[in-house]
Image: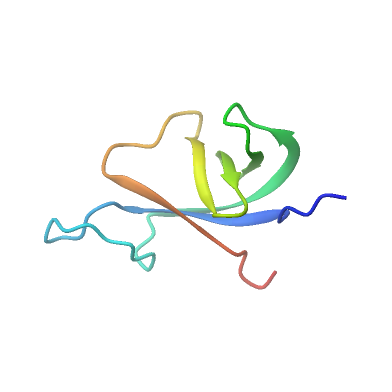
Length: 89
């Protein structure tokens, strides 16, 4: 039986606030995607989730994104990723 969450919401946010300081704020997400478990393990060794143009290996215990592709490319410099529960799910 699979005990991992079957979906997450991934939020792409600016890594820095307007004043240049680091931020963990997710209110200003530039893009979001609901990703669903594929049942496969990614090259990082963590479960693979895909959806809405994103492909991520996520450690479900810590909610850390261990690998991420956005529209087939790595994350742009200056962006950060957050993981949230799927709203309403």
